[in-house]
Image 1 (cartoon, rainbow, N blue to C red):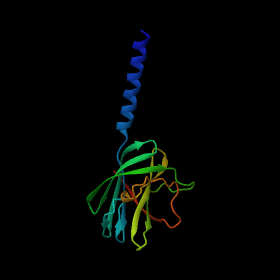
Image 2 (image 1 turned 135 degrees about the vertical axis):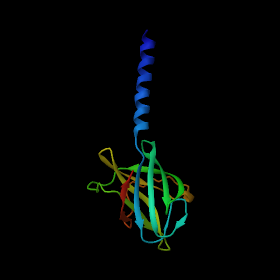
Image 3 (image 1 turned 60 degrees about the vertical axis):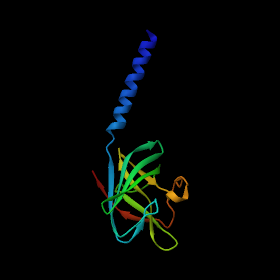
Image 4 (image 1 turned 180 degrees about the vertical axis):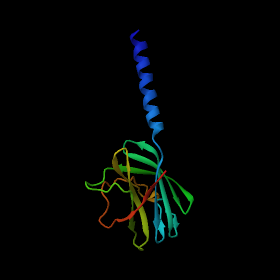
Length: 149
């Protein structure tokens, strides 16, 4: 009888946990970029619209994202989720850094959801490194973005 109760409890917990994960809506931000930019996969795009969607939480410290430039999907990317510094705006922002040639390189973005603001940092895919930076570099260029459904 004890195992039946324990088994039922486990099933109920997993059912509610799965429902909670499935209920997380896809969250997207959009920004208009005034100059050409490079995505984490190394692809270069002309000035235009950038859309980044948090498709799902990959782990407690990472997210899985779809990035689209000028309407075309560029791929899926993994990020490291961190808490932005105190006083960060609830408004979404997209972060870029300039490479040695002065080209904008997407570094990450901020997104408010569930009553808190998270920052998602992405590392260049070609570097093979995990996006570990917990704070943006001093030369980070922040651009305003808009939340989209």
